[in-house]
Image (cartoon, rainbow, N blue to C red; front, side, top):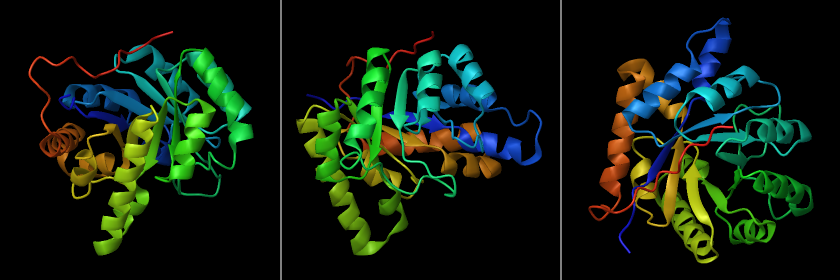
Length: 260
């Protein structure tokens, strides 16, 4: 079967980080989401953290109501975040690990060790029609746990791959390939993200089982120099160059946006 287009989810958290550094209303994450849509993004990702360090509740309200792209809400497995997700019913919810003292997400969710805790969150979101994703390490145990939990999607943590060099990076890329293969064979949809930049995205984008990449911090940082539209268009082009071309006339693989 011909490979379909690899989707790009643009994470706009750090537009909100810049806004919150000074207070006020600018730069506006909603404007960033609209620019991302024009530049070739297939979805918008936003992480509503417990301490609200970047994305706010009001941002989620506006993104849910006012953008045409699917919204992927990154969230911790807490009762507060579940209530918010069920209220807004985004297209997708990606359950991520979260520690208040961390600067950014520092690794994958331990789905294997937290199955009992995660099960009711996966079930409640799925029953509400929200596509559930688990942000995990590229590890067979975590893949098996995601399948057991009934999550239809996993997002493989690419942070370690991006941080190391040489043979260590090659080993991490092999881990990502193997996890993508195992997950696909188990019936999961495979996404990947964290730390990806222009010089690291190609080998990951070339993994044919991966259906979506979520990228944010690098794009917002690069936008300082070239603009957000240009940074996203360049990332989109690099992804497309690395990916086998879809057959002309193949159906679009972009998920339809849902609004509550």
